Image (tube, rainbow, N blue to C red; front, side, top):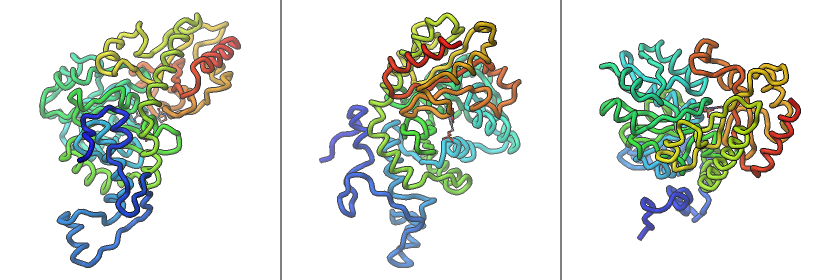
Length: 403
Ligand code: LCS
């Protein structure tokens, strides 16, 4: 009898779910099935596999055994019926929209999301007759007020990139009621932090590029939800329309990374909290945006929705006048003076990364929309890596001393 993984702890599931000795030779590490196509025993066999009457693989854009292992593992980790992997986080975002929406539909979108997501939803979707209303989803009253008769989806990130506001997922589901899909981009708070489906969301997606792969060497995405929704998103979105499939080699690397997800994420969160606490006490720091801080308005949601862990990312802003420099000028000087953290976009890598949202991750968002979102020119985003917290703080101390 197989072990009851459904009721097992998080680390046990992350290591064993979806994965077992390969049927061909018993390989324990999932083999990389690096092939475009699969041969049929006969025409009849090919016809049956195309029909779905016989299980099996026909062509790697439609499915691949290595990628399927990743999908089954992610479905187990997020607690969903099924998962489809995509070639990037943006492939996942666009496949959900292309798969589930049509002309005439209305979408409520979080007013603070990753720059490219903002462009795809707010600029591209209206070209196809989809109505879009940006809303601060951390305000449940505003979400409820934005619902129209043709609303089909609420889409948001929590925590939000880069302002770190947290949305009450169960609250959004209650505010919009049944019949409107709640889609959560969970990139900033992967399990064991937050499991949106358990909070009532219908779809959860990730940029796997970040914590899930966790080693900074892959670009990929995943979408998890009901078997019915995933079949549509896969067939219309990932495999046919966007064609943004995950490669077998990338799937292999991600499967490897997922087995240590729990330990890594806990360490990222602890490091971010330590740096946030340090920055909060620095006189030339105007504000620190980190939901795990006791002073954060989202601290209660960290306890109730985020397993008490928070996230590995924080944003902050220096004072308006730092020794005669504006917060933007002082911020640039600070980033250039850091010796350990790299100036780079992305997040969730083993190495700490620091970046300037207004000119980097959100540069493609117009200055007006950035101002509306609350992304100031002085804002800096820090992704805490897996280093020792004391070293990260020592690096900030020496850089701040140079301002
Ligand atoms: N969703 C979120 C919340 C993201 O932060 C990103 C990328 C994506 C989706 C898209 O994922 P990708 O296609 O890159 O795998 N965020 C980035 C960031 O903040 N810095 O660099 C990329």
